Amino acid sequence: MEHKVIQDPILVVAIDVGSTHSGYAWQWRSAFKAKGSVEFNTNWGTGAPQIHKTSTSLLLKYTDDKKELPSVVAFGHTAESQHAHIQSDSQYQKEKHHYQLFKRFKMLLYELNKSNKSTDVQTESVDGFPQDILTIMFLFIKALKEDFLNKNKTFDTEDVMNKTVWVVTVPALWSQTTRGFMRKAAEMTGIADNNLLLASEPECAAVYCIHLPQEQQINMCNLGMPGTKFLTADIGGGTGDLSAVEVQSDGKLKELCNVAGERVGGQQVNEAFSQAMYDSFEGKTVQQLFEEATPFEIMKLEREFEASKLSIIPDSSEEKIKLSTPKLVREYITNNKIKFVDGAPISYNKNEETLEVNRVFVREKLFKTPCDLINATILKVLKEQPEIKIVVLVGGFAESGIVKQNVGDNIKKTFPDVKVVVPTSPFRAVLTGAVLFGHDPFIYKSRISRATYGVRTNTIFKEATHNPSKKWFDEENKVHRCKDVFDIHVKIGDSVSLNEALEAKTYTPLYKAQKEISIPVYESSEVGPTDGSVMYTTDSGCREIANIKVEIPTAEESSKRGVSVRMIYGGTQLSVIAECAHNGKECPAVIRFN
View 1 (cartoon, helix red, strand yellow):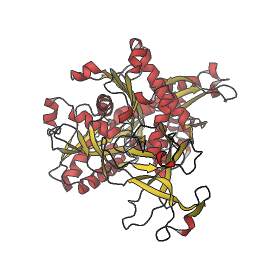
View 2 (view 1 turned 30 degrees about the horizontal axis):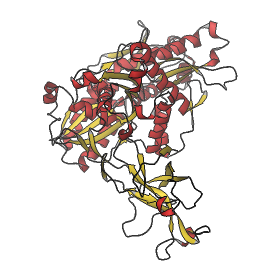
View 3 (view 1 turned 30 degrees about the vertical axis):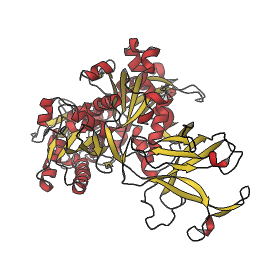
View 4 (view 1 turned 180 degrees about the vertical axis):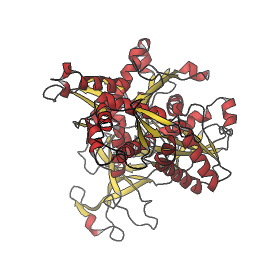
């Protein structure tokens, strides 16, 4: 939707809803022109780490009947702390069921993206309470937006907000439908259509890289130089998302291939640690004990491990990670009611009353699966694009010394001439790049189409080419037509420029009484026919993703009521322009994703 967003905004605010951590950043236009810094929020409440992101958590309060929209109590680190307090404080005993904590809900959208299911589905709170994912995402984006405005009250004026672009980041591998879901959630917060821009996370990271200061560019193989081809791997808490680009002579970026991605990241290490902890004890009693631990105890344990895992260096010694032990677990260990299995990587220090984890075990075992997945995904792209000689690691997981060395060593084995580099602030790459992208949304000169896109039409039936089962008789116009014809606009793998005038297709209403045309938009994972045959929207792998509503010109003659439709595929999200076929005037057109 880049072509619809206001140009030269006076302020850009980027919101990054991550799988495990989220945040926002902003920059005035004057600072962008002066190549100034992007600003971040690091104040996430009492006791929260003073970093530019907080946890992707949302604490809601429901009414007794749970029919009204819940109110936001807190988000991020504060939401987790308040939920733990409410669950443990007897003062809330009678009403604590009104408070529900939702965590890591973005991960559900990855599953929806893969399965092509409707986004009208339920997520669950940590206590198992159901809520539709759209409401949760809307309220979380709203909480971040309001936090920004509350901390920058002088920005919240009509003049400033009308000229502000809000950028919401999305994974590159998400479908048009899932991107449409995020747009809807953001628009529900009150952001107008022409003030909202979706931005691909690894693409934002690439933008960040080419805008780095010259001294950092030198340390990263001068990847901002025209002609340079590099691969950005955004590896965060829940996913690894890639983008391969070439820097053009004018400083803009050209996408080289379809993106790759996997559900992989730091959260996998956490999950593997939880399983290793259970496996370190005999029987299944310990798992029940952890489930009965207080929210405060679990929250403290999780935060301690999260902080420790990124500090482990590749050549770390036998020194152990010390973690707080929930009271019940501590009592059962002390009284010999539960015992460790032989050779367990986790032990108990009676003097300090802490669980101790072998750092070598964490490095060599818990990091192995996510690192293997990251390596496999990167190597696949490098094999397809042999001219790429630089791989840039960004995202929170890229701060781990283990990940840096593992990925670097594995790539070097297969591609010895490929350099793996990490910027000084990999955790800030996506948010910084998102702000820069908001100032210059046309920095991407072209992108590769993720699928084959087109519309469902009715055409004059041709006995020689059309399927007889698709034949129907148009009574008003006294002609046989073929239904469900997939009229292709762009094919999967095509390189499409954002400003490129793709071939417009003209559609005419079937009936004289029609005042608008409804055009269903479809995508397919297939390239489409190359032998002159016809593709149908009912074919396997083809699904409806959106609908275009176009107001029809008022001319009496049917020949002058045609609408020329041009869909824009080079942007972050699919969009449409419609014109009157006989005079070129733009027609009101709206595209709504399913």
